[in-house]
Length: 218
Picture 1: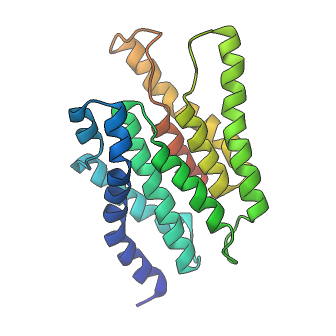
Picture 2 (picture 1 turned 180 degrees about the vertical axis):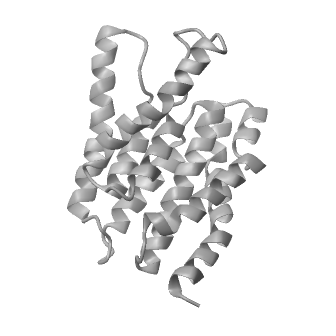
């Protein structure tokens, strides 16, 4: 059996375990900021999200073709963290620090691996850019729309994690691609569902999907 096939089969077992582990790790923080029933729902993995996890697993060979097994496992850890963050944000509009900052730390640690495509210097630069870019854009937005932040602190931390894992070019690309992904949803909510123009939509799921899609490019 080839190494890639062995890794793919192994990751099939690890994917749901890691996602559930991330959700369980974030549960105390989610419960602190949300009501009990919402917190319980947000930290479970329903069938629809299991299918999403299966798609993440199936696309892993495209994300890291021919990479070292350690790289595969690290990328799976990153991807399942993104998936758990997207699940929680979609339900609660909260990106838990327990997930985002854990991803930042492990992104920096991954850069120390000799075969990792991102150096420690690039990971540090990516993390700084990932946090300061949305912070700066949000600050400019608040000058025009006081009291109506465009992004929350969790989005800043998530982009910091993206930069730490994928390098300094990633945050801007993921931010732009995430906005493009969510634009049709925002228009649909406004026109078809009658949402107020002032209603907020969680940005995290778009950023997480954009990070996974952008990974082969970076």
